[in-house]
Image (cartoon, rainbow, N blue to C red):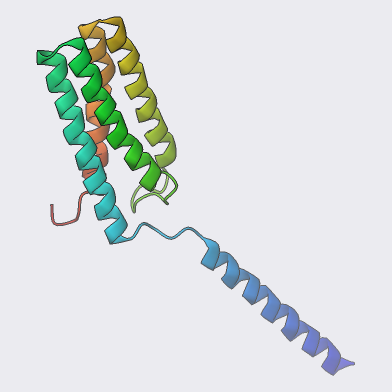
Length: 146
């Protein structure tokens, strides 16, 4: 009888440890360095498209500005598709990265609507917060050597 109880205790202990190990393995792993570098590159590409859109807003017409903002949105959607479902980068575990990505896309769409209406100042105001978010995201994803 005692041997049976001891065997059950060890079996339950082993099952409990196996369940803990399985839970630990299922935790999302932090972003790898190559994923972080790829995210940084994608954010830098989107930032370049943003700068082109701002230049078009200042010097170009409404159609050129809308085309550049659409190009920026395509670059940003690439970021969303590639990294929207990934775990947050190290140091940003408490942030809602997917929410941030979608909020940025919403801001870009809002700017496109304002551009179509034709208000340059309102378009500038709609695009302004995006620069700060891009700079912050670029800083967070920059390789350690930068």
